[in-house]
Length: 139
Image 1 (cartoon, helix red, strand yellow):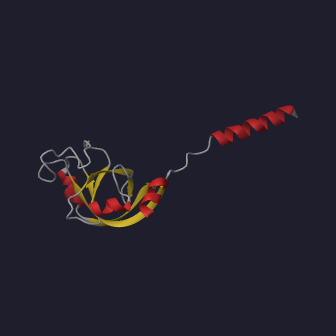
Image 2 (tube, rainbow, N blue to C red; image 1 turned 90 degrees about the vertical axis):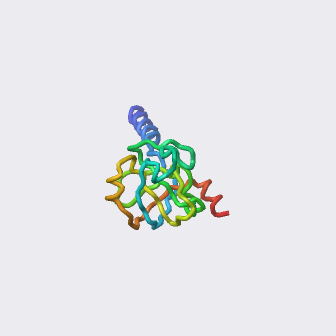
Image 3 (tube, helix red, strand yellow; image 1 turned 180 degrees about the vertical axis):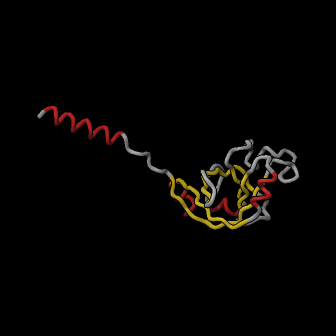
């Protein structure tokens, strides 16, 4: 009997310690225009590997740039973004010229051909907002 109680308690403690980590984000959806860009000076600036946030772009990483109007919606520096039709989670690492609105640019390293093939299209995205940030946005 004591062994059964001990085993039951052990199983209960083990189950509670194996809880999956809860997602800290509230995911919001948005439809945007999407194009692609590369680390080349004629597409960006004199220093094409440094973003407007001051980060270094690393080819092969999943990064995006956002139009500045999206910053006010919570798509700020390092915000995680899921893009329908693409695998993985992208991070906001750059911001675009103020002439663009409701737009993202997907970073494609130095692969100019891949960016041309992507072209320009409308996509649905989901972006993660931390609860504390969500309260600030709603104030």
